[in-house]
Image (cartoon, rainbow, N blue to C red):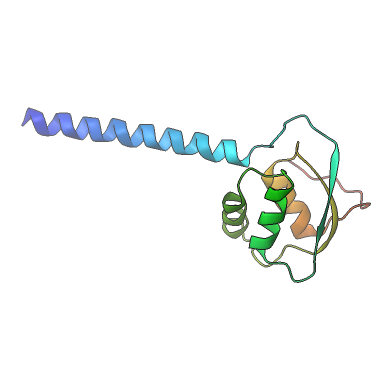
Length: 117
């Protein structure tokens, strides 16, 4: 009987540790690549670009650390198919969420707007 309760406790501790590590990994991937950096990087999104191609472009420019995470975020946030083409100023100091919002709202280079965090 005691062996079963020890296993259950161990399984619970392991599950909690995995949950904490998962949350930490998600926060790391969603965070800015270079916090505090404000220098804009110009990004051109061609008309008809898929979320996957946009994720690849952003990852290739060093703006995000994971194209897979960007695609997942866009899908889970309900922005799939809503990212707009155009020329954007993005920064390594921006979070993945901020970039996705800019692209979904079409806040292109030269357009002044304030985004809430």
